[in-house]
Length: 318
Image (cartoon, rainbow, N blue to C red; front, side, top):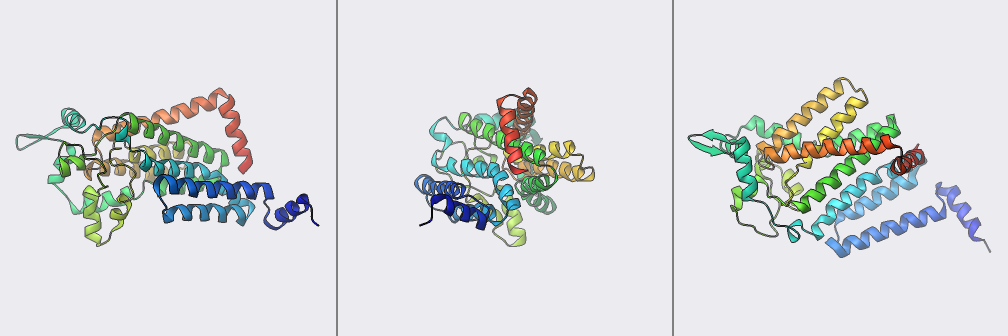
């Protein structure tokens, strides 16, 4: 009869993972699927996430460390997904007209004697080239941070963790604001006026012109899976490229930073041009990113408990 230690040794020899670690990973995977089913129902993406993590975890020591490092982004995705279970308009009044009026007051454009928001101006002046560019830039908001993180993982594990944790911190800050200040995007007013309508589905807004031009349903599919349309302030779409640009500068990526800068400006413009965000949303997204970067740097500079925990995490994936 084999002892538990013998079985554990055999398991570790075959997979490089101890029986205890395998049990923990299995328990967390099953717990995530069960909780997701209870809160928001079953979705194929949940199985894909679990399958991807487990595959990387067991494949090799390098992919295992990669999977562990990317748990930071998985936490972000899970938090974002679970927002569907707790709509922010349950907790605070949705800001619709007051935000619209503020945008017009600060950034209004006079056209034919009428004050318009920048979104309304571009809605009246669509341009095919700008439609295509806006779609391309908006598609960068997740792949660019994810790709940059993968680059940092193989270049500098410390910078990978610092970037990933800053990204997560900025998202958490943005999510908190979503619940404190639920806000409707510009397209909502264009579609429904100033009345609040719960359970409003996501909308492609100006990005529909990108799909129509290429005859595809790319953005339709993306926005059908949105967590909450009343989460326009701050624009995290606008926050992400600033985080990438900052860490690009820190890592002295030279000409790559020029590309990051162009993408950043392109996403900021596209957010307004496509009527997904006001200029105010973009500005507060920038503030959110800058604040998150500052807070994380402050925590690292103090070299306290947070710093020591981060350094242990870095050591675990080196």
